[in-house]
Image (cartoon, rainbow, N blue to C red; front, side, top):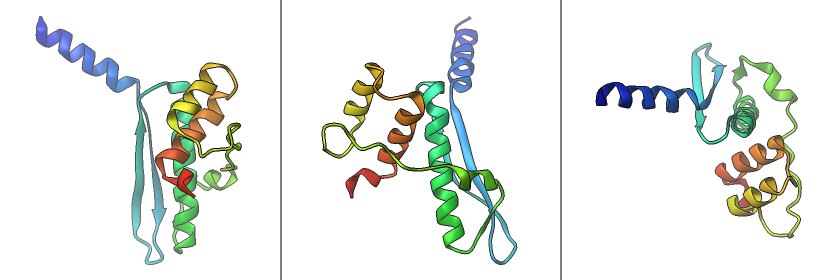
Length: 122
């Protein structure tokens, strides 16, 4: 019985994740994947964090001379709203604003990915 409950819990947790990976072709014609990412917090936000990371990676891959399979990633605007407090974004501050409905799920997901990529340091 314990095994069944444990297995059920693992399946539920695994189904609550949002995943993605970047597929591209090198200049030599080799098919590769990169930027495998997964978020397991809130699906309505996670999908945007994954989208942001994959788009960011796609733009970096093209800059290195690779061909990205999913060209829709280039149409994504990666701009992040300025932090209302004038400081670099932090997880806690973004969470607070999202909780107070001052950030949409998309803005929040993009900001989380932006922070995870270390882009809030500049």
